Length: 224
Image (cartoon, rainbow, N blue to C red):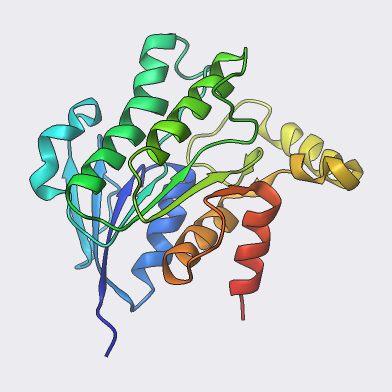
């Protein structure tokens, strides 16, 4: 009988992390899902072990950071976090600290959501920060490390944003006209990313950095 798995999720209160949590809860191969968040997911399930913490001090919880895989779905935007120092603490500091804890606790799989265009040499702060995060995560040499680079993430969010309906129509039109080399810029559903993240743990992939169109391919092949 296959050993049941324990997963750690960072960012389960966000769009992608929340959908990933739902995927794992209904999968019998997982018997424990450890959450580290600043706020509760407000779900009652015997699989969930939830720790409400100050994520900038994640290193203080090494003794709780134990499992088979770490899924890191932490991320902000410069609009939500305009202060560059705080933004870097979120998008660089938390994922890298999580990767270091995974390495120290011999967790063999680390899967993190980055972004299309991540590049440590970029002149753009957002892309540069994501690229630096990727490099620092890879330096931990965790055996199965996967960095996902989705394009614009689509999905229903709990928070209602102004002009959201109009923006969705723009995205649909853009997806329609983006052909050939532009396909990689098409939006990607958060649910697709969540499915691909789970599949990468259960079925190892050859590449460590996985671009948006490949994320879609992995998720599609997983569907019955």
